[in-house]
Length: 570
Image (cartoon, rainbow, N blue to C red; front, side, top):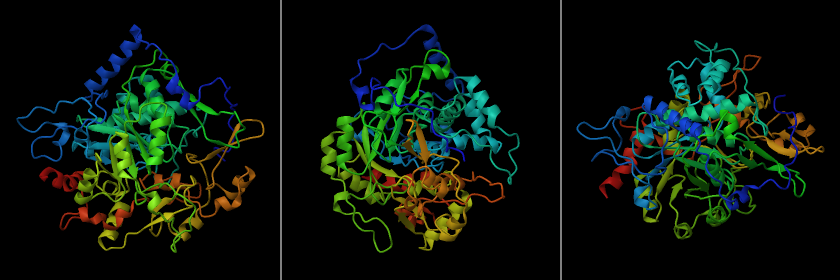
Protein backbone atom coordinates (compact mmCIF):
# COMPACT_ATOMS: atom_id res chain seq x y z
CA UNK A 1 0.00 0.00 0.00
CA UNK A 2 1.30 3.47 -0.83
CA UNK A 3 2.75 5.30 2.12
CA UNK A 4 3.10 2.27 4.37
CA UNK A 5 6.88 2.01 4.13
CA UNK A 6 8.85 3.40 7.06
CA UNK A 7 10.88 6.57 6.49
CA UNK A 8 14.61 5.99 6.35
CA UNK A 9 15.38 8.85 8.69
CA UNK A 10 17.21 8.86 11.99
CA UNK A 11 16.54 11.29 14.82
CA UNK A 12 18.35 14.57 14.38
CA UNK A 13 21.35 15.12 16.61
CA UNK A 14 20.77 17.14 19.77
CA UNK A 15 22.87 19.92 18.31
CA UNK A 16 20.23 20.61 15.64
CA UNK A 17 18.26 23.70 16.63
CA UNK A 18 14.69 23.08 17.69
CA UNK A 19 11.84 25.14 16.23
CA UNK A 20 11.74 27.61 19.09
CA UNK A 21 15.51 28.14 18.93
CA UNK A 22 15.24 29.87 15.55
CA UNK A 23 14.11 32.97 17.45
CA UNK A 24 17.39 33.22 19.34
CA UNK A 25 19.72 32.39 16.46
CA UNK A 26 22.26 35.17 15.76
CA UNK A 27 21.47 37.13 12.59
CA UNK A 28 23.33 36.06 9.48
CA UNK A 29 24.41 38.24 6.57
CA UNK A 30 22.07 38.12 3.62
CA UNK A 31 23.64 36.66 0.50
CA UNK A 32 23.56 39.52 -2.03
CA UNK A 33 26.03 38.28 -4.61
CA UNK A 34 25.53 39.29 -8.20
CA UNK A 35 23.90 36.07 -9.36
CA UNK A 36 21.46 36.16 -6.45
CA UNK A 37 20.40 39.68 -7.37
CA UNK A 38 19.95 38.64 -10.99
CA UNK A 39 17.65 35.80 -9.92
CA UNK A 40 15.44 38.19 -7.97
CA UNK A 41 15.37 40.73 -10.83
CA UNK A 42 14.61 37.94 -13.28
CA UNK A 43 11.68 36.80 -11.16
CA UNK A 44 10.23 40.32 -10.87
CA UNK A 45 10.72 41.06 -14.58
CA UNK A 46 9.08 37.78 -15.54
CA UNK A 47 6.08 38.56 -13.35
CA UNK A 48 5.89 42.11 -14.73
CA UNK A 49 5.81 40.84 -18.30
CA UNK A 50 2.90 38.60 -17.33
CA UNK A 51 1.07 41.66 -15.96
CA UNK A 52 1.49 40.49 -12.38
CA UNK A 53 4.05 41.89 -9.96
CA UNK A 54 4.45 38.92 -7.67
CA UNK A 55 6.49 40.54 -4.91
CA UNK A 56 3.98 42.12 -2.53
CA UNK A 57 5.58 43.91 0.43
CA UNK A 58 2.27 45.30 1.64
CA UNK A 59 1.11 42.17 3.44
CA UNK A 60 -2.25 43.00 4.97
CA UNK A 61 -2.63 46.50 3.53
CA UNK A 62 -6.23 47.37 2.74
CA UNK A 63 -6.55 48.50 -0.88
CA UNK A 64 -8.44 51.73 -1.49
CA UNK A 65 -11.34 51.36 -3.92
CA UNK A 66 -13.05 53.89 -6.11
CA UNK A 67 -15.64 56.06 -4.31
CA UNK A 68 -18.91 54.16 -3.91
CA UNK A 69 -17.44 50.91 -5.17
CA UNK A 70 -17.49 47.63 -3.25
CA UNK A 71 -15.42 45.65 -5.74
CA UNK A 72 -12.71 46.62 -8.20
CA UNK A 73 -13.33 46.78 -11.94
CA UNK A 74 -13.10 43.50 -13.89
CA UNK A 75 -9.69 42.46 -15.09
CA UNK A 76 -7.99 44.64 -12.51
CA UNK A 77 -8.64 47.76 -14.60
CA UNK A 78 -9.13 51.10 -12.89
CA UNK A 79 -12.51 52.76 -13.08
CA UNK A 80 -12.79 55.07 -16.06
CA UNK A 81 -10.97 58.33 -15.52
CA UNK A 82 -9.19 57.13 -12.37
CA UNK A 83 -5.68 55.88 -11.74
CA UNK A 84 -5.07 52.39 -10.42
CA UNK A 85 -4.87 52.31 -6.60
CA UNK A 86 -1.40 52.87 -5.21
CA UNK A 87 -0.28 50.22 -2.71
CA UNK A 88 -0.03 51.64 0.82
CA UNK A 89 2.48 50.77 3.53
CA UNK A 90 1.41 48.39 6.27
CA UNK A 91 0.03 49.95 9.45
CA UNK A 92 -0.86 48.26 12.70
CA UNK A 93 -4.04 50.29 12.92
CA UNK A 94 -7.27 48.35 12.59
CA UNK A 95 -8.76 50.89 10.20
CA UNK A 96 -6.14 50.15 7.55
CA UNK A 97 -6.75 46.38 7.52
CA UNK A 98 -9.22 44.39 5.41
CA UNK A 99 -12.60 44.01 7.06
CA UNK A 100 -13.14 40.58 5.53
CA UNK A 101 -10.79 37.61 5.27
CA UNK A 102 -12.06 34.90 2.95
CA UNK A 103 -11.56 31.54 4.64
CA UNK A 104 -8.98 29.16 3.16
CA UNK A 105 -11.20 26.12 2.62
CA UNK A 106 -9.37 23.02 1.49
CA UNK A 107 -8.91 21.08 -0.47
CA UNK A 108 -9.38 23.33 -3.48
CA UNK A 109 -12.69 24.96 -2.50
CA UNK A 110 -10.82 28.19 -1.86
CA UNK A 111 -9.12 28.00 -5.21
CA UNK A 112 -7.41 30.86 -7.03
CA UNK A 113 -10.55 32.09 -8.79
CA UNK A 114 -12.28 32.73 -5.47
CA UNK A 115 -9.28 34.41 -3.85
CA UNK A 116 -8.81 36.54 -6.95
CA UNK A 117 -12.45 37.66 -6.89
CA UNK A 118 -12.32 38.56 -3.20
CA UNK A 119 -9.02 40.43 -3.56
CA UNK A 120 -10.50 42.50 -6.41
CA UNK A 121 -13.14 43.64 -3.92
CA UNK A 122 -10.51 45.10 -1.59
CA UNK A 123 -10.60 42.26 0.94
CA UNK A 124 -8.12 39.47 1.73
CA UNK A 125 -8.54 36.58 -0.71
CA UNK A 126 -7.06 33.32 0.56
CA UNK A 127 -6.19 30.16 -1.35
CA UNK A 128 -6.24 26.82 0.43
CA UNK A 129 -2.73 25.37 0.57
CA UNK A 130 -3.87 21.83 1.39
CA UNK A 131 -3.05 19.13 -1.18
CA UNK A 132 -2.07 21.61 -3.90
CA UNK A 133 0.50 19.16 -5.26
CA UNK A 134 -2.09 16.55 -6.16
CA UNK A 135 -4.52 19.25 -7.32
CA UNK A 136 -1.94 20.61 -9.77
CA UNK A 137 -1.06 17.11 -11.00
CA UNK A 138 -4.72 16.28 -11.62
CA UNK A 139 -5.55 19.61 -13.27
CA UNK A 140 -2.74 18.95 -15.73
CA UNK A 141 -3.98 15.41 -16.34
CA UNK A 142 -7.43 16.86 -17.06
CA UNK A 143 -5.75 18.73 -19.92
CA UNK A 144 -5.84 22.22 -18.35
CA UNK A 145 -8.59 23.14 -20.86
CA UNK A 146 -8.54 26.89 -20.19
CA UNK A 147 -4.73 27.06 -20.04
CA UNK A 148 -4.54 28.86 -16.70
CA UNK A 149 -2.25 26.34 -15.05
CA UNK A 150 0.19 26.32 -17.95
CA UNK A 151 0.18 30.11 -18.08
CA UNK A 152 1.18 30.24 -14.41
CA UNK A 153 3.84 27.57 -14.92
CA UNK A 154 5.28 29.70 -17.75
CA UNK A 155 5.79 32.47 -15.19
CA UNK A 156 7.63 30.22 -12.73
CA UNK A 157 11.09 31.82 -12.26
CA UNK A 158 12.94 28.53 -12.80
CA UNK A 159 11.58 27.28 -16.14
CA UNK A 160 13.49 23.99 -16.22
CA UNK A 161 11.64 22.92 -13.05
CA UNK A 162 8.26 23.94 -14.44
CA UNK A 163 9.00 22.01 -17.64
CA UNK A 164 9.73 18.82 -15.71
CA UNK A 165 6.42 19.10 -13.84
CA UNK A 166 4.58 19.73 -17.09
CA UNK A 167 6.27 16.79 -18.78
CA UNK A 168 5.41 14.46 -15.91
CA UNK A 169 1.70 15.23 -15.61
CA UNK A 170 0.22 17.12 -18.56
CA UNK A 171 -2.13 15.12 -20.79
CA UNK A 172 -3.08 16.86 -24.02
CA UNK A 173 -6.86 16.85 -24.31
CA UNK A 174 -7.20 15.35 -20.83
CA UNK A 175 -7.36 11.79 -19.57
CA UNK A 176 -10.40 9.63 -20.23
CA UNK A 177 -13.17 10.11 -17.66
CA UNK A 178 -13.14 6.42 -16.70
CA UNK A 179 -9.35 6.23 -16.32
CA UNK A 180 -7.49 6.70 -13.04
CA UNK A 181 -5.30 9.68 -12.35
CA UNK A 182 -1.58 9.03 -12.41
CA UNK A 183 -0.31 8.93 -8.85
CA UNK A 184 2.25 11.30 -7.38
CA UNK A 185 4.87 10.66 -4.66
CA UNK A 186 3.46 10.48 -1.14
CA UNK A 187 4.28 13.19 1.41
CA UNK A 188 7.56 12.31 3.09
CA UNK A 189 9.95 13.59 5.74
CA UNK A 190 12.68 13.15 3.13
CA UNK A 191 10.84 14.14 -0.06
CA UNK A 192 12.22 13.32 -3.46
CA UNK A 193 13.34 16.01 -5.86
CA UNK A 194 10.26 15.33 -8.00
CA UNK A 195 7.90 15.76 -5.05
CA UNK A 196 9.52 19.03 -3.97
CA UNK A 197 9.29 20.36 -7.51
CA UNK A 198 5.61 19.50 -7.72
CA UNK A 199 4.85 21.00 -4.30
CA UNK A 200 6.73 24.26 -4.88
CA UNK A 201 5.30 24.83 -8.35
CA UNK A 202 1.77 23.95 -7.21
CA UNK A 203 1.83 26.59 -4.49
CA UNK A 204 3.40 29.13 -6.85
CA UNK A 205 0.71 28.49 -9.48
CA UNK A 206 -2.19 28.90 -7.05
CA UNK A 207 -0.89 32.15 -5.55
CA UNK A 208 0.22 33.54 -8.94
CA UNK A 209 -3.24 33.05 -10.42
CA UNK A 210 -4.92 34.47 -7.32
CA UNK A 211 -2.79 37.61 -7.62
CA UNK A 212 -3.06 38.01 -11.37
CA UNK A 213 -4.63 41.16 -12.83
CA UNK A 214 -5.12 43.29 -9.72
CA UNK A 215 -3.26 44.90 -6.80
CA UNK A 216 -5.37 43.37 -4.04
CA UNK A 217 -4.45 41.21 -1.09
CA UNK A 218 -3.83 37.47 -1.36
CA UNK A 219 -2.97 34.95 1.35
CA UNK A 220 -2.61 31.20 1.72
CA UNK A 221 -3.95 28.89 4.42
CA UNK A 222 -2.14 25.78 5.72
CA UNK A 223 -2.84 23.24 8.47
CA UNK A 224 -0.36 22.60 11.27
CA UNK A 225 -1.57 18.99 11.33
CA UNK A 226 -0.29 18.45 7.77
CA UNK A 227 3.41 18.95 8.40
CA UNK A 228 5.31 17.12 5.68
CA UNK A 229 4.57 19.43 2.69
CA UNK A 230 4.75 22.65 4.75
CA UNK A 231 8.27 23.86 3.97
CA UNK A 232 8.28 23.55 0.16
CA UNK A 233 4.66 24.73 0.10
CA UNK A 234 5.47 27.98 1.88
CA UNK A 235 8.52 28.54 -0.32
CA UNK A 236 6.41 28.16 -3.45
CA UNK A 237 3.79 30.60 -2.17
CA UNK A 238 6.51 33.11 -1.24
CA UNK A 239 8.06 32.80 -4.71
CA UNK A 240 4.72 34.03 -6.05
CA UNK A 241 4.68 36.93 -3.57
CA UNK A 242 1.99 35.76 -1.17
CA UNK A 243 1.20 38.55 1.28
CA UNK A 244 -0.20 36.57 4.23
CA UNK A 245 0.17 33.05 5.60
CA UNK A 246 -2.64 31.74 7.82
CA UNK A 247 -2.34 28.52 9.79
CA UNK A 248 -4.50 26.64 12.27
CA UNK A 249 -5.38 23.04 13.23
CA UNK A 250 -2.67 23.06 15.87
CA UNK A 251 -0.24 25.53 17.40
CA UNK A 252 2.15 26.61 14.62
CA UNK A 253 5.00 27.93 16.78
CA UNK A 254 7.69 27.23 14.20
CA UNK A 255 6.11 28.94 11.19
CA UNK A 256 6.91 32.64 11.87
CA UNK A 257 10.63 31.86 12.11
CA UNK A 258 10.46 29.70 9.01
CA UNK A 259 8.99 32.66 7.11
CA UNK A 260 11.88 34.82 8.33
CA UNK A 261 14.51 32.35 7.18
CA UNK A 262 12.94 31.59 3.80
CA UNK A 263 12.71 35.31 3.11
CA UNK A 264 16.47 35.50 3.66
CA UNK A 265 17.18 32.48 1.46
CA UNK A 266 18.22 30.27 4.38
CA UNK A 267 17.73 26.56 5.02
CA UNK A 268 14.73 25.68 7.16
CA UNK A 269 13.61 22.71 9.17
CA UNK A 270 10.38 21.70 10.86
CA UNK A 271 10.17 19.38 13.83
CA UNK A 272 7.68 16.58 13.25
CA UNK A 273 5.16 15.28 15.75
CA UNK A 274 6.13 11.62 16.10
CA UNK A 275 4.31 9.34 18.51
CA UNK A 276 6.59 7.25 20.73
CA UNK A 277 9.69 9.43 20.26
CA UNK A 278 12.20 8.82 23.04
CA UNK A 279 13.25 11.62 25.41
CA UNK A 280 15.68 13.89 23.59
CA UNK A 281 14.83 12.51 20.15
CA UNK A 282 13.92 15.04 17.47
CA UNK A 283 12.61 14.15 14.04
CA UNK A 284 12.70 16.90 11.44
CA UNK A 285 12.07 17.59 7.78
CA UNK A 286 14.33 20.02 5.90
CA UNK A 287 14.17 22.35 2.91
CA UNK A 288 17.05 24.26 1.33
CA UNK A 289 16.05 26.99 -1.16
CA UNK A 290 19.54 27.18 -2.68
CA UNK A 291 19.65 23.45 -3.28
CA UNK A 292 16.18 23.57 -4.83
CA UNK A 293 16.97 26.35 -7.32
CA UNK A 294 20.48 25.06 -8.02
CA UNK A 295 22.23 28.32 -7.12
CA UNK A 296 21.96 31.29 -4.78
CA UNK A 297 18.58 31.32 -3.09
CA UNK A 298 16.29 34.21 -4.04
CA UNK A 299 15.68 36.89 -1.42
CA UNK A 300 11.93 37.09 -0.87
CA UNK A 301 9.43 39.28 0.95
CA UNK A 302 8.40 37.88 4.31
CA UNK A 303 4.59 37.54 4.38
CA UNK A 304 2.49 38.48 7.38
CA UNK A 305 1.53 35.56 9.64
CA UNK A 306 -1.95 35.06 11.10
CA UNK A 307 -2.44 32.24 13.58
CA UNK A 308 -5.90 30.67 13.61
CA UNK A 309 -6.84 30.05 17.24
CA UNK A 310 -9.92 29.43 19.34
CA UNK A 311 -8.91 30.94 22.69
CA UNK A 312 -6.68 33.60 24.19
CA UNK A 313 -4.64 30.89 25.87
CA UNK A 314 -3.38 29.58 22.53
CA UNK A 315 -2.86 33.12 21.24
CA UNK A 316 -0.76 33.97 24.29
CA UNK A 317 1.39 30.88 23.72
CA UNK A 318 1.93 31.98 20.11
CA UNK A 319 2.98 35.47 21.16
CA UNK A 320 5.39 34.27 23.84
CA UNK A 321 6.87 31.14 22.26
CA UNK A 322 6.61 31.47 18.47
CA UNK A 323 9.89 31.44 16.57
CA UNK A 324 9.21 34.83 15.01
CA UNK A 325 6.68 37.61 14.75
CA UNK A 326 2.96 36.85 14.84
CA UNK A 327 1.11 39.59 12.97
CA UNK A 328 -2.43 38.83 14.10
CA UNK A 329 -5.06 36.22 14.86
CA UNK A 330 -8.19 34.69 13.38
CA UNK A 331 -10.42 33.54 16.24
CA UNK A 332 -12.53 30.61 15.09
CA UNK A 333 -15.71 29.68 16.90
CA UNK A 334 -17.03 26.13 16.96
CA UNK A 335 -19.64 26.99 14.31
CA UNK A 336 -16.92 27.47 11.64
CA UNK A 337 -16.57 24.81 8.95
CA UNK A 338 -13.87 22.20 8.46
CA UNK A 339 -11.86 21.10 11.47
CA UNK A 340 -12.79 22.61 14.83
CA UNK A 341 -10.76 22.81 18.00
CA UNK A 342 -12.09 20.21 20.47
CA UNK A 343 -14.00 21.53 23.48
CA UNK A 344 -11.97 22.26 26.60
CA UNK A 345 -12.48 19.40 28.99
CA UNK A 346 -13.81 15.93 28.19
CA UNK A 347 -17.53 16.39 28.55
CA UNK A 348 -20.17 14.03 27.12
CA UNK A 349 -21.42 14.34 23.56
CA UNK A 350 -24.84 15.82 22.81
CA UNK A 351 -27.88 13.62 22.21
CA UNK A 352 -27.08 13.87 18.49
CA UNK A 353 -23.49 12.71 19.11
CA UNK A 354 -21.76 16.06 18.63
CA UNK A 355 -19.14 17.71 20.87
CA UNK A 356 -20.62 20.14 23.37
CA UNK A 357 -19.00 23.57 23.63
CA UNK A 358 -19.46 25.78 26.67
CA UNK A 359 -18.46 29.16 28.14
CA UNK A 360 -14.82 28.06 28.55
CA UNK A 361 -14.56 27.72 24.78
CA UNK A 362 -15.60 31.31 24.08
CA UNK A 363 -12.86 33.88 23.43
CA UNK A 364 -12.49 36.89 25.68
CA UNK A 365 -12.33 39.93 23.42
CA UNK A 366 -10.67 42.10 26.04
CA UNK A 367 -7.85 39.58 26.24
CA UNK A 368 -7.26 39.81 22.49
CA UNK A 369 -7.45 43.60 22.53
CA UNK A 370 -4.76 43.65 25.19
CA UNK A 371 -2.43 41.63 22.97
CA UNK A 372 -2.17 44.71 20.76
CA UNK A 373 -2.42 42.70 17.53
CA UNK A 374 -5.23 42.79 14.96
CA UNK A 375 -7.75 39.97 15.12
CA UNK A 376 -10.68 38.76 13.03
CA UNK A 377 -13.69 36.76 14.26
CA UNK A 378 -14.79 33.60 12.44
CA UNK A 379 -17.75 31.25 12.68
CA UNK A 380 -21.29 32.32 11.69
CA UNK A 381 -20.22 35.95 11.26
CA UNK A 382 -21.36 36.52 7.67
CA UNK A 383 -24.02 39.17 8.31
CA UNK A 384 -23.77 42.97 8.38
CA UNK A 385 -24.79 42.98 12.05
CA UNK A 386 -22.11 40.45 12.97
CA UNK A 387 -19.46 42.46 11.11
CA UNK A 388 -20.51 45.59 12.98
CA UNK A 389 -20.48 43.64 16.24
CA UNK A 390 -16.95 42.41 15.56
CA UNK A 391 -15.73 45.94 14.84
CA UNK A 392 -17.38 47.23 18.03
CA UNK A 393 -15.50 44.59 20.02
CA UNK A 394 -12.20 45.88 18.65
CA UNK A 395 -11.74 43.29 15.89
CA UNK A 396 -10.30 44.29 12.54
CA UNK A 397 -13.19 42.43 10.93
CA UNK A 398 -14.40 38.91 10.25
CA UNK A 399 -13.34 35.77 8.43
CA UNK A 400 -16.03 34.34 6.17
CA UNK A 401 -15.88 30.81 4.81
CA UNK A 402 -19.23 29.14 4.17
CA UNK A 403 -20.78 32.05 2.24
CA UNK A 404 -17.81 32.06 -0.15
CA UNK A 405 -17.68 28.24 -0.41
CA UNK A 406 -21.01 28.27 -2.24
CA UNK A 407 -20.28 31.26 -4.46
CA UNK A 408 -19.82 30.80 -8.21
CA UNK A 409 -16.05 31.27 -7.97
CA UNK A 410 -15.35 28.51 -5.45
CA UNK A 411 -13.83 25.21 -6.57
CA UNK A 412 -16.74 23.09 -5.32
CA UNK A 413 -18.38 20.83 -7.88
CA UNK A 414 -21.09 22.99 -9.49
CA UNK A 415 -23.83 20.32 -9.42
CA UNK A 416 -23.34 19.56 -5.73
CA UNK A 417 -23.03 23.28 -4.98
CA UNK A 418 -26.38 24.01 -6.64
CA UNK A 419 -28.02 21.10 -4.81
CA UNK A 420 -26.80 22.31 -1.40
CA UNK A 421 -27.94 25.88 -2.11
CA UNK A 422 -31.40 24.57 -2.97
CA UNK A 423 -31.41 22.52 0.23
CA UNK A 424 -30.55 25.70 2.13
CA UNK A 425 -33.34 27.56 0.36
CA UNK A 426 -35.81 24.87 1.47
CA UNK A 427 -34.47 24.81 5.03
CA UNK A 428 -33.07 21.29 4.59
CA UNK A 429 -29.30 21.90 4.75
CA UNK A 430 -27.75 20.50 7.91
CA UNK A 431 -24.22 20.09 9.23
CA UNK A 432 -23.12 17.44 11.71
CA UNK A 433 -20.04 18.10 13.83
CA UNK A 434 -18.54 14.62 13.68
CA UNK A 435 -16.15 13.93 16.57
CA UNK A 436 -14.50 10.91 14.90
CA UNK A 437 -14.76 11.30 11.10
CA UNK A 438 -11.37 12.95 10.62
CA UNK A 439 -8.16 10.95 11.12
CA UNK A 440 -6.67 14.06 12.78
CA UNK A 441 -8.71 13.56 15.93
CA UNK A 442 -10.23 17.05 15.58
CA UNK A 443 -14.02 17.42 15.29
CA UNK A 444 -14.96 17.82 11.62
CA UNK A 445 -18.10 19.41 10.24
CA UNK A 446 -19.86 17.35 7.55
CA UNK A 447 -22.87 18.35 5.43
CA UNK A 448 -25.45 15.56 5.54
CA UNK A 449 -25.96 14.47 1.94
CA UNK A 450 -27.12 11.18 0.51
CA UNK A 451 -24.57 9.75 -1.92
CA UNK A 452 -21.61 11.19 -0.01
CA UNK A 453 -19.44 9.83 2.79
CA UNK A 454 -21.78 11.49 5.31
CA UNK A 455 -24.30 8.77 4.53
CA UNK A 456 -23.57 5.48 6.38
CA UNK A 457 -24.40 3.29 3.37
CA UNK A 458 -22.00 5.16 1.10
CA UNK A 459 -19.22 5.19 3.67
CA UNK A 460 -19.61 1.50 4.51
CA UNK A 461 -19.57 0.45 0.85
CA UNK A 462 -16.34 2.31 0.15
CA UNK A 463 -13.29 0.07 0.07
CA UNK A 464 -10.72 1.48 2.49
CA UNK A 465 -7.60 2.72 0.74
CA UNK A 466 -5.05 5.29 1.89
CA UNK A 467 -3.12 6.58 -1.12
CA UNK A 468 -2.94 10.35 -0.64
CA UNK A 469 -1.51 10.19 2.88
CA UNK A 470 -1.87 13.81 4.00
CA UNK A 471 -3.44 12.99 7.38
CA UNK A 472 -1.25 10.05 8.40
CA UNK A 473 0.26 9.97 11.89
CA UNK A 474 3.98 9.48 12.36
CA UNK A 475 5.19 6.94 14.90
CA UNK A 476 8.61 5.71 15.98
CA UNK A 477 9.70 2.26 14.83
CA UNK A 478 11.98 0.07 16.93
CA UNK A 479 14.96 0.86 14.72
CA UNK A 480 14.54 4.59 15.28
CA UNK A 481 13.00 5.40 11.89
CA UNK A 482 9.52 6.78 11.22
CA UNK A 483 6.48 4.73 10.32
CA UNK A 484 3.19 6.16 9.10
CA UNK A 485 -0.37 5.07 9.76
CA UNK A 486 -3.86 6.50 9.32
CA UNK A 487 -7.01 5.52 11.23
CA UNK A 488 -8.90 5.70 7.91
CA UNK A 489 -6.69 3.17 6.13
CA UNK A 490 -7.53 -0.56 5.92
CA UNK A 491 -8.10 -1.73 9.48
CA UNK A 492 -5.69 -4.66 9.28
CA UNK A 493 -2.91 -2.39 8.03
CA UNK A 494 -3.51 0.06 10.86
CA UNK A 495 -3.43 -2.67 13.52
CA UNK A 496 -0.31 -4.22 11.97
CA UNK A 497 1.42 -0.87 12.44
CA UNK A 498 0.58 -0.78 16.14
CA UNK A 499 -2.67 1.15 15.93
CA UNK A 500 -5.75 0.33 18.00
CA UNK A 501 -8.78 -1.08 16.22
CA UNK A 502 -11.14 1.19 18.15
CA UNK A 503 -9.41 4.22 16.62
CA UNK A 504 -10.57 3.15 13.15
CA UNK A 505 -14.28 3.08 13.99
CA UNK A 506 -16.27 5.80 12.22
CA UNK A 507 -13.29 7.25 10.36
CA UNK A 508 -13.75 8.62 6.87
CA UNK A 509 -11.25 9.18 4.07
CA UNK A 510 -11.16 12.98 4.19
CA UNK A 511 -8.32 13.23 1.64
CA UNK A 512 -10.02 11.40 -1.23
CA UNK A 513 -13.46 12.73 -0.31
CA UNK A 514 -12.43 16.38 -0.45
CA UNK A 515 -10.77 15.95 -3.84
CA UNK A 516 -14.00 14.42 -5.15
CA UNK A 517 -15.99 17.47 -4.07
CA UNK A 518 -13.86 19.68 -6.36
CA UNK A 519 -14.41 17.43 -9.40
CA UNK A 520 -11.04 15.66 -9.15
CA UNK A 521 -12.11 12.19 -7.92
CA UNK A 522 -9.90 9.16 -8.28
CA UNK A 523 -11.26 6.24 -10.34
CA UNK A 524 -10.44 2.84 -8.86
CA UNK A 525 -9.46 -0.31 -10.76
CA UNK A 526 -13.01 -1.65 -10.46
CA UNK A 527 -14.33 1.52 -12.12
CA UNK A 528 -15.76 2.95 -8.91
CA UNK A 529 -15.29 6.68 -8.42
CA UNK A 530 -14.32 7.94 -4.96
CA UNK A 531 -17.36 9.45 -3.19
CA UNK A 532 -17.27 13.06 -2.01
CA UNK A 533 -17.49 14.55 1.45
CA UNK A 534 -18.55 18.17 1.99
CA UNK A 535 -17.61 20.30 4.95
CA UNK A 536 -19.19 23.60 5.87
CA UNK A 537 -19.94 25.85 8.77
CA UNK A 538 -23.33 25.97 10.44
CA UNK A 539 -24.20 28.91 8.19
CA UNK A 540 -24.98 26.55 5.32
CA UNK A 541 -28.48 26.35 6.77
CA UNK A 542 -29.14 29.92 5.61
CA UNK A 543 -26.54 30.47 2.86
CA UNK A 544 -29.34 30.86 0.30
CA UNK A 545 -29.88 34.34 1.77
CA UNK A 546 -27.21 35.61 -0.63
CA UNK A 547 -29.36 34.72 -3.66
CA UNK A 548 -30.99 37.58 -5.51
CA UNK A 549 -34.73 37.12 -6.17
CA UNK A 550 -35.17 34.46 -8.83
CA UNK A 551 -31.44 33.61 -8.92
CA UNK A 552 -29.97 30.15 -8.39
CA UNK A 553 -26.39 31.25 -7.72
CA UNK A 554 -24.41 34.22 -6.43
CA UNK A 555 -20.91 35.65 -6.72
CA UNK A 556 -18.26 36.43 -4.12
CA UNK A 557 -18.85 40.13 -4.83
CA UNK A 558 -22.49 39.70 -3.78
CA UNK A 559 -21.36 38.43 -0.39
CA UNK A 560 -18.93 41.31 0.12
CA UNK A 561 -21.42 43.92 -1.05
CA UNK A 562 -24.01 42.67 1.38
CA UNK A 563 -21.60 42.54 4.31
CA UNK A 564 -19.80 45.81 3.58
CA UNK A 565 -22.90 47.83 2.72
CA UNK A 566 -23.66 48.64 6.34
CA UNK A 567 -20.02 49.53 7.01
CA UNK A 568 -19.95 51.90 4.04
CA UNK A 569 -23.08 53.62 5.35
CA UNK A 570 -21.82 53.89 8.94
